[in-house]
Length: 252
Image (cartoon, rainbow, N blue to C red; front, top):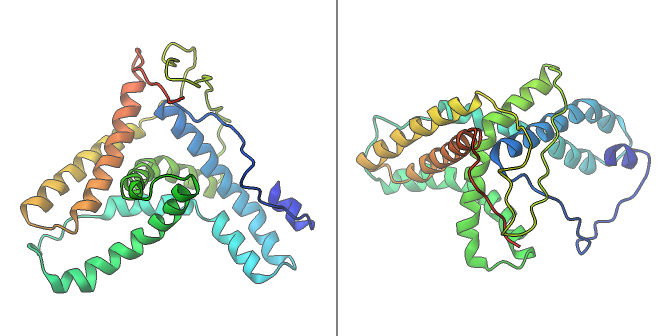
C-alpha cells in the first residue's frame, strides 16, 4: 500500500518518536509462521510492483532503493543454499597469518560488518549500552540463520506461485512476567522443517568439533553461528510442539 501511494505522488514522513505497540509471537512455531507469511508476501509484492516502479518517472536512486528493499528476502534463500554448501577445508589445517589477512578477514568483514553497523545503530537508537552490541548482534545473526530454511521455503513458494492459506499469528496478550501462554487454546502450525533444522545443527556441531581439532580458528565462529541458529530454531520448535507447553514469560 505504501508503495502504491508513493507511486501516486504521496509523501511520507518518518517520525521516530511515535511508537506503535505490537505483540511479538512468544513461541517459535508461531514466529516461523509469521516470518513465513511476511517473507512470502514481500516477494509477491516484489513481483507485482517492481516492474511498475522501474517504469515510473521516479529518480533512479529511489528505484534502486525500492529494489533493494523488495528483494531483500531473497537473502534467506541464498543463506539456506550457503548453509547446505559449507564444509570445512580438509586440506587446510592450522593457523596462517597470510591466509588470515588475505582470505579470512576480508570475508569475515564483508559478511558481518554491515550487519554489526545496522543492528548497532538500532541498539544505539534504543539507548542500549554500546558494549552489548558484540553480544546482541551474534544472537540476531544466529536467529536469522535458524529462520533461513523456513523463509527460503516462503521465497520459493512466492517465486513458483504456490498458493497457501493465510496463517494468522497467535496473540496471547502477554504483557508482564507473571503471565503465561502455554495454556492458551491456540493451535500453531507444525512443520517437518524442524527435522532438517536439527540435522543441520548436528552437521554443524561436527564442523565445530572438526574445526577445533584442526585449528581452523577463523571458521569456528561461522560454524558456531550455524550450529546454534539451527539448533535453537529446531529444538525450541520441537519442544513447543509437544502436547504439553514449556513455560515462557516476557519482561514487563
